[in-house]
Amino acid sequence: MITQLNVKEGDIAATTQPAAVVTSFDKMKIDIKINEYDILGVEEGKPVTINIDALDKDYQGTIKNISRVATIENGVSYFESEVDFDGDEDARSGMSAEVRLVTSEADNTTSISAEAIQTAEDGSTFVYMYADDKKKTLKEQPVTLGISDGTFTQITEGLYPGDTILYKPSMNLDMMYGMQVPAE
Image (cartoon, helix red, strand yellow):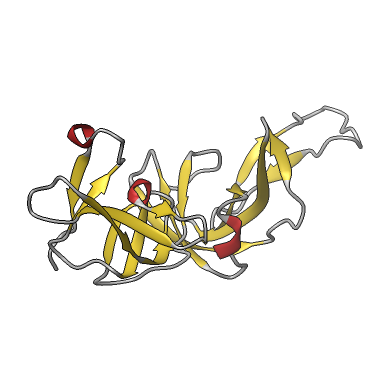
């Protein structure tokens, strides 16, 4: 399909500008920027899901050409990459899209807010729990961490469904928020 025509009948064509731009919508490409904190789980050839905002429609694509050199914008490092996907009659060049990539996943696991996890001086991790039913004494419950998306973290050992942990612990026990580990 001709998407841009730069000359009219009778014009003299310039050698510095193409006379026309021909675009194929069968194979489409999205240029993306991957945050430095997310880049480790991203590999060329990995499948992605693309949602074009205006169409509310998902397409399947593939990560291609991940830059090995970061681009810095406003103090944040990004790695430029491309996503290739098969378009259709609805997808158009220039539409806004969201690209989703699963870097790791776990089923039937216990996960809690990453903010509830504490790190000891020796590097071990724990959460605060009440030591007894009177809720007057705290204890540090050691936990083993699994995968995390930055917001929620998988707990592989140390907590059980129904356990109540303290979220954002403070020196004042009355100000603490409780968070219950969901039952399976």
